[in-house]
Length: 325
Length: 295
Image 1 (cartoon, each protein chain N blue to C red):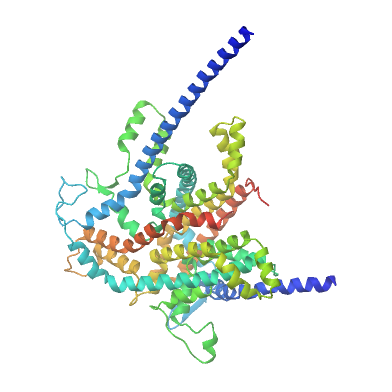
Image 2: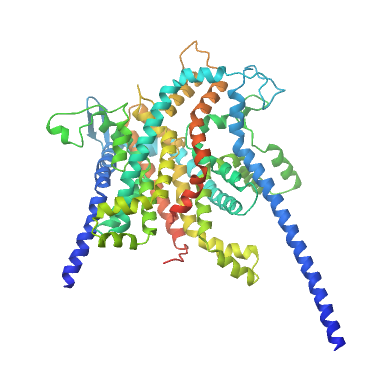
């Protein structure tokens, strides 16, 4: 008996030792992992933050000659750059334009794309697959390919040919309608992607929801508006955020559509950036690098604020929507 | 009885047309019509007056692009090779970062906020100006050098005796780290979403069976992420092709600004066909290996 007991004791101790060793190894590898992770994130974080930090540094710097002893913190703090940038960007006007353009377009896109996405997700009408293929095609084909024709359509806009009967046409260039009209018909900026997002989302919702509504005698549209859309709040938020940001940052289409007035920030800024390459009006004290950085700061500040406030939704958004190949 | 039921279903399905009615109008007037019109321009000589006057000239525009234009073919091949180089790196990088950001650690939220920052800034003109902040003129004063460049490291590695092709690949990787970080925001987001769909129980079972983290990655995570990988690859390719600072995009814009509408239409159509072929090839290649567990 004693021998066996002894043996068991011994074995237990051995096991414990092994256990302790394993725990230590586990802990060491854990610490190594977090150190590695920390260093990696620090390094890459620096790469990402570098341009933003240097932007701040330039924007508030009043020492244009450049002082080699100061790298990050400006030796002479000044708001001149910001003030000059506000003047040349016509900041408050362009900001108003940008916000108006982006918000209305985003809301219209939510409306039209959710309708189309729901149609593609729940109804098996004839030609559905072919039509959805066209949706995918609209994602792939860059607007650059057909923008010329769209531009002319808006230059001589006649309500899809209806106006032609009465010899009627308007010039919509330089107005927000160049963005709003395509958004209403879910062909706005990256609308294809949003239709795809909504379709994925609606496909993931249980059918019982609608069946209950149908049994209660709701029509398809009423079901959509009262049952499905409220349930799709997270998808709507995703689409709103992305649409807003992409409209804010869009430069190519806006540059084409806005030439004289109502320009959003990105267009004005691009022209100022062009000025700095020597095309600008003579005699303006546009101290290039400093002012440009101040202008960029003014441009991204609103979306940066939006991002910080809504970052939780940004990050969770895609997960909620469940995009998949 | 049965017939009546199927008719009811058909009628209900046809309601779908009402839902996509707006889209159908949109796609006809803002996609198909413009696309066909530019296709016509591509085969014509376009003269701008009150309206566009077109004269059919057949393949003349395409012939000029392919055989007379010195820039087009060269820029196309260079942006293709750039893409071949960058897309795999961006996808692997973002998968890796998503893996890290999916772990539990202090400051995770902050790290996530940081890595998604490019999503909201990188698509605009701002980043163009911002990234030029990192530029500085080198000693000779001729070339502009980007600050995240690795001349020293290259020399050191070469002196140690590592083969030059490996060194240049490695250096190329590091030289692009800025671009890669700033271009993979959405991709990280997608992979992170993908990682959240992998059931935790799979890992519990595999660790009970004694699988290492390495095996877990290749046998569980990687296959289950494959649908997301497909989306990521496609997104990255489209993104790099339609990026407005892309050389071809600049070319198209230049001809457009010079009012050579027919020529620029031909340029963009040629470009689009190349994109489409590449996308089809890639999708076909990856789609065969995509794993679907649900359904």
